[in-house]
Image (cartoon, rainbow, N blue to C red; front, side):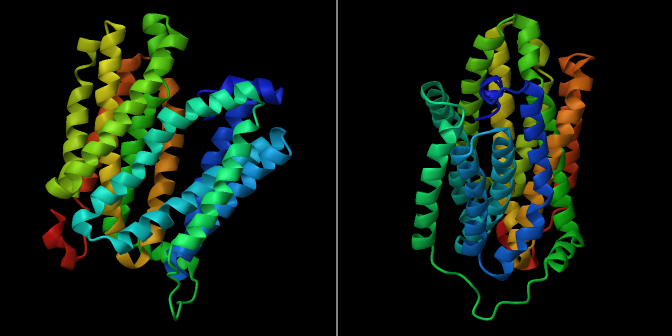
Length: 366
C-alpha cells in the first residue's frame, strides 16, 4: 500500500518522499535475514515458522499504530517485509508437505491469489482509511486482523513439530541448499526473472507520463490493469501448471513474454495500446512466477522451507537490482528497458534447463 500512497505517507509523517523511499529500500535488505530464520520451519515445524513470521509482522504494524512516527513507520516497513519473508516459505513448505506434487501448482496458485486480491480490494480500502483517519490508520486495521488471523493459525493448523527434532543448524541447512546444483539454478532462474520484471516495473509509469501526459489517471487505471492481469495470471497458472507441467509452464510463459516484448512498437502509439501491452506483459510474468513456486518446493524436499526462503530472498534482491538498473536504462528510452528484460527472461529459460527434481519425482514432474 505504500507505493501508490507514497506522497500521502510522506505528508502525514512530515518528511520528504526520499525518506519514505529510504524505508522501502531498507526493507529490501531484510530479505537477506529471512534464510537465517526460515530453517526453524524445517527443524521445528512449519506452524512454528508461520507463527514467527506473523509475530514479527505484528511487532512492526502495532508499533506504527500505537506510536505513530517516522521511526515506527520505518520499523513497520522493515519488519513487515521480514515477517513476510519468513511466513511465506513456511506456508509454502506446509502446502508442499500436504499436497501431491502433481496437484501442488493448483494449491499454491490459490495461495498466490492473495497478492492480486489485496491489490485490487484492500489497497483502495487502505486509501479510504487514510483519508478518514491518518496515515497510521491502516496499521491499526492490519494489527487487529493480524492478531485474529494469528489466533486462527494457532488454532486451526495442526501441530507438525517433529517428535524427535533434529539439532537446529541454520548455516548447515543454508550450505546444503547452496551446494545443490538444481537449487542454485532454481534460485538463479527466479532472480533473473524478477530482475527483468522490475526493470519494467520501476519505469512503466514514467514511460506513460512521458508518452501520454496522463500521470495520475494513467497510473490509476494501470494499477487496476496490473491487478487484473495478476489475478488472471494466477488463474492460468492454477489451470496449466499441473496439466502442462511446472517446467513447461514456466518456460512457455518466459518465451511468450520475451516474444511479446518485441511487439511494443505496435502498441506504444496509444494509451489503450499501452494498457493492452502491459496487461499481457504482467499476465505472462504472473503465470511464470506462480508456476515456479511448486517447482521450487520439490527441488530439495528435506530442506523445503530453507530452499523457499532463499528463493524468496533472491526475488527480493532481484527487485533491488532492478530498481538500481532501471532508471539508467530509461535514459536511453523505454525500449532499452524492454530489451534488457527480454535478455534476462531468456537467461532464466537457460537456467530452467538445469533444474532437476529428485529421481523419484521425475516421472510425475513433466
